[in-house]
Image (cartoon, rainbow, N blue to C red; front, top):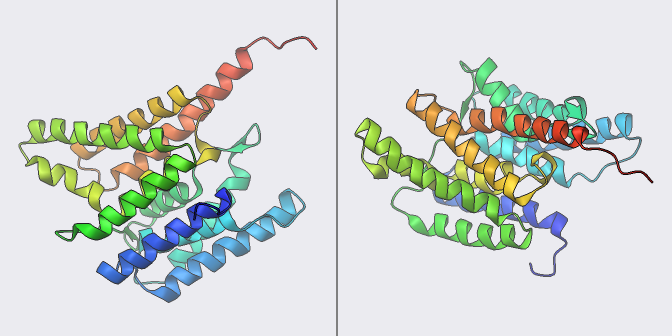
Amino acid sequence: MLSLDNRYVPPVFITLILLVGNYSFGILESYPKTLLAIVTSIGVELILGRIFVHRWVNPVSAYITGISVGILIRSPASWPYALCSAISITSKYVLRIKGRHLWNPSNFGVSTMLFLAGSTVASLSIQWGNYLWPMLIIWALGSIIIWRLRRFHITGTYVAAFLAFALLRSWLTGNPWQSEVAPITGPMYQLFVFFMITDPRTTVQSRIGQCAVALAVASVEMILRLCQVVYAPYYALFTVGPAALLIETWIASRRPRTAS
């Protein structure tokens, strides 16, 4: 693992999450549906890559998106898996500013499906329960990998903020603190904290800015949770992430250009 190209570390890790999570708790709806999500994601990526950038793009990012969709989406039908992957990848090429896509692809696709097709589609809500070893393995390996990719400060800021806001929510609602913390122990949050909020393509450039955005995502999520919004983390990142990129782009455009 230590000699593996950084581009291939995330797909190896996300595959590990899938295998450990499915072996321990059966987190997948089915292997065929997950495979459909992956194949659709890679296929759409290759086609749109040829159309928009005139080359065959590396499918690593599409694999991560497809497997994320396969893990996160829950539906008795197969079409939501293919459609969610297609929407996710398409957003990379259509919703762009200054050459960057605004949304993390899987966050955009999953959020869109949950909002528009909520009667057919749900999201993974399984937690590790009393079996802590799968969570500990994933978090230990994930922390090492994210540290290696120099994105640990984003994950660390979000997790610390989530725990602090869980205490605040417990005080405001009267619910036990453990019940407010419990969601972060689930496989869904493993993908969220290690892949969605740390996506290099959709995070601001400065380290301080990245931490500030992670804190803002946790803050908006807390508000949504207090309003009993079921899919609070997805919607929080969906709104905060692009707004941060637009603000960063606007600030950059206001800076005077250095004469050459």
